[in-house]
Image 1 (cartoon, chains in turn cyan, orange):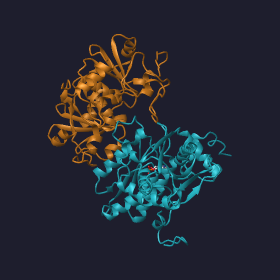
Image 2 (tube, protein in one colour; image 1 turned 90 degrees about the vertical axis):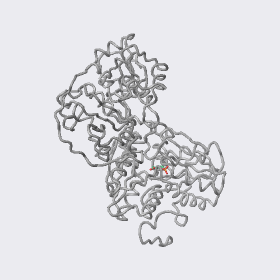
Image 3 (tube, chains in turn purple, brown; image 1 turned 45 degrees about the vertical axis):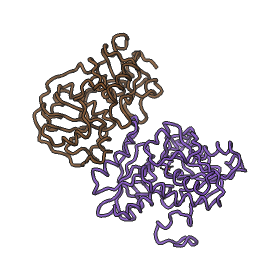
Image 4 (cartoon, chains in turn blue, brown; image 1 turned 30 degrees about the vertical axis):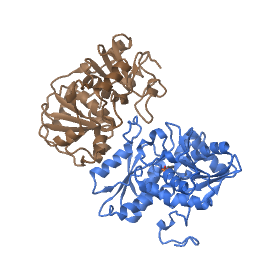
Amino acid sequence: MNHQTRVYDNVFELLPNEQNPSPLVRINRMNPVPEFALYAKLEWMNPFGSVKDRAAWTMLQDLEHRGELGNGRGIVEPTSGNTGISLAAMARARGFHMRAVVPNKVPLEKKVLLKIAGAQLDVVSDELCPAPGLGDGSINIAKTHAKASRDKYAMPNQYENEKNVEAHFQTTGPEIWRQTEGKITHLFVSLGTCGTVTGTSRFLRSKNPNVKVIAVQPTEGHDVPGLRNVTQLGVSKLFDSSLVDDIVEVEFRLAYSRAMELCQTEGLLAGPSSGLIYEGAREIILRDKAGCGVMIFPDNIFKYTSNMMKHIPGLASGNQA
Amino acid sequence: MANYANPEVLVETDWVKANLGKPGLKLVEIDVDTKAYDAGHVPSAVGFNWQTQLQDQVRRDIIGPDAFEKLVGGAGISPSDIVILYGDNNNWFAAYGFWLFKIYGHNDVRLMNGGRVKWLNEPDKQMTTEVPKPAPVTYKASANHLDLRALIPQVFEAQKGGKWNLVDVRSPDEFTGKVIAPPGMSETAQRGGHIPGAKSIPWSTAVKPDGTFKSADELRSIYLDQKGVDPNKDTIAYCRIGERSSHTWFVLKYLLGIKNVKNYDGSWTEYGNLIAAPIEK
Ligand SMILES: Cc1ncc(COP(=O)(O)O)c(C=O)c1O
């Protein structure tokens, strides 16, 4: 492994850590307060394409080390796509099978990518009037497989697995601390399983208790894959509200229009959850006026062309001769 | 503390575990999405598909007595058996099944409190993918209690006000017509809103965070005192396609013991499509 020449013995050596951090890129044209240095951490530069490489690898390694995998036993996991794509590719490369249970509203691109990455795919309807406190359909189906077919499946369960938090405590946090030379004042994140927010903030707060953590959430009834509104956070055991200073709610369609703007004015091909985080960061920058902010951009736009067509007028037309 | 009016119609997961395999006890999982049953179910439970097995596949209707007899007999269930129903989505579809078993006069049918998710999340409960192959028996339906069902003439009658309680168990956004159906649902209507005079009492009002029913005292205080359901009047519960309303029908009729409660299974997908029917928003 050589990070200078970038020659590696296997793809896993590319996974991010303090010695090989995902890039931090400064926002220029879209920064409303130039005295406030604003950076985007490009998680799509990770080898399997998203921030979820970190949690997926740490959870998979943990299962392997504990002897939970092998002899026909693979994994089953509920996912909005990114965790599944990372886990499937990793698991298959390590010789294990993978079953992904996804909510129906996951974009078509992700469903197909999951199959290409080698996952067996179950699509379930999560929308049927969410039940109080009982978790989502996809989580429950995955749990059912893990319970009824123990010999075939181990379930990492990103919503409850402390390794998801640990991944960010050991990599994302230290990377940001080093990349900003300890100057970070604001961290901007979104909420899905909450592994990112909890692990990264816990590390940064251990270095500087004054680092502000801002979580950006979409409005209720949203269509931003991978994210949750706090009203949907019951399923995530990893959310620690004591680490979050502000929760900024953003009209979910802005996630799409801001993502498009990032593509077209900053050259950052950011996905909708990044667009949402950017909008939240913008509001806080205008309020706080000075500082050094880091936005964690979970993934890029390539998996969302069908969603973009749904939410950005004009993209769906003119695509045929 | 007061008891449910008919405590015998509800069993706990622990009771089911303790009684698994006893002769005369039959378990049925009823799901809208049978992926759940296929992924794993309570040992010995057969699976019914709400869409394809409990609905007539030609006309829009519940299955008739012949089809019911064939389905239930084919699952190895005799009229004298104790039937335990449970399912996905908080037992909505199991409650619909309960309603159907009662229409056709099955004597001892019960719901497993909390449904499949409660069982799933209890570490001491087993699940299996093994599908039982019961020997079919001849089942004769003992009744045809269509008085448990509201059809449109009664709904019009109720809508005129005064004599009936009309209970709309859908979400507040469906009640006000902000949405016609929950997002992603294919069965829908031409118009949004609710039946004039209906009280909005979402189905989830009846359950605790773990999906089990609230106590009799709590239910009585919510439905009768706070929401003003008059137990001396006849009652119709409705939702969108009649499954969430079966859940509330079960609460009103069996847990609270209100006498004449009907489930309007046509619900909003019928009413919201009628020409010239009055609608409130
Ligand atoms: C696109 C996208 N954005 C954001 C997130 C949220 O990250 P986390 O699950 O660590 O809260 C996820 C992960 O689920 C995601 O897939």
